[in-house]
Length: 454
Image 1 (tube, rainbow, N blue to C red):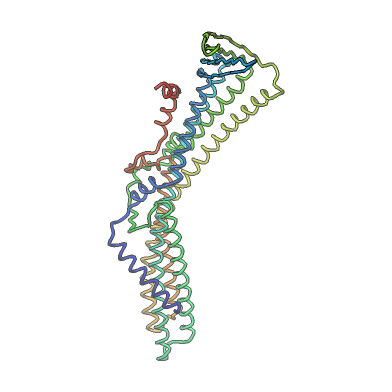
Image 2 (spheres, rainbow, N blue to C red; image 1 turned 180 degrees about the horizontal axis):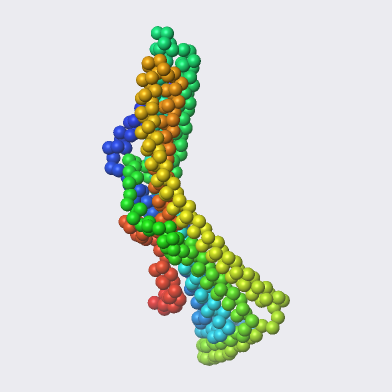
């Protein structure tokens, strides 16, 4: 099959696909975001990580709770001496109790660090949510603009094909030259190559879309009303980002965790007091005449570290350094968020300007192409002039497609930079993924004891 036949077949397949998609219900950005929110593995992984982090709270709180255990053991002994059979039994039951009653507030510091870590993981869900939803928008617009580019370049190839045929006809009647034909053939080859590249890029974009959304793209409709969430001024956008962006909240939680870790390391220098006790009963004696006994112990211990080979001092210095680092990371996060907001805001302004310019260029380009074709037919212009005019029109139309796509992406990028590209802010019809309730549940450290007694 020749390349021309393959190209026609591809165009027919694309047309059939467009008819089928056109008959289906339009798939809006909001619908794609809703589907992706429920599908995204990265978001589910962030939720599981937050739940795992919540368990650290229960583990830390266990340090100031008692440990209670029960034991049961038994023995049966027998012997035969001088034909005499002797046997005895023993059965021991007991309860043990151990608790740290003071550790220089080390456990309290560990609990605070665990709570800060759980908060950080919860904010990470929101941050991952924004990353996923922005990637969905980018994939959505890549497919939408990709389909427009495929249609435009197919139309462009058809135009060049018509010009090639016109050049050949003009050559046959003596009104054209072989140069005109060669130029038209070269431009058609370039147009076909551009069309094939657009088809390949569209296939990649559709695969990316399906990766994030979990379903193939349908009849896409990029219209949305989420621009209402954008404030009227750049300073307001920056202020909102600095207050509520998940990355900012994560950095604040990281500072809390580092401060608590530092406090816990310093607490190693203080005293530690523990109490322990046990009570048990023991039944011993020959199986025919057992005797019972009950015993118990109660004790306490106070210890103060004097020297630990330098480990305690090193842990304190390390914790202090990590605390400073968390504060530096927070400043970096603030700077990055401001940069993202300004960049997205500028992207919207730039896209608006490009759309206005491209619309003007497309309108003028259509007029120029029609005029140059008429002048070529009158003999005052060449085929090359027609081909160049069409190339300029195609470039303007592609610029308009890309600028329109960039406007949508920049709008959602600004929402993400402000911290508002979340299912809750967008009003998506989904169950919000959060580990808050799970954290509240695992905070009940007595549940383990109740499960044993019930």
